[in-house]
Image (cartoon, rainbow, N blue to C red; front, side, top):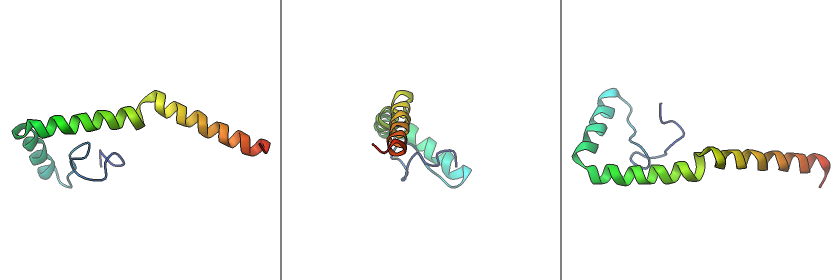
Length: 75
């Protein structure tokens, strides 16, 4: 539930699990496979910078306001 809406599949940007035990095992697996953990961290950073960073989200919000204003003005 904590990662809801962030990733569609396990390991894409974060580890996903349905039970506390499965999540604990997923975290432990990252310690055993640090290269996979590092690759996932790089993907997560790219995802955050591209889609969730404050300037990106602000620009999208401003653009959506502009579109609504244009529609209301009939432009």
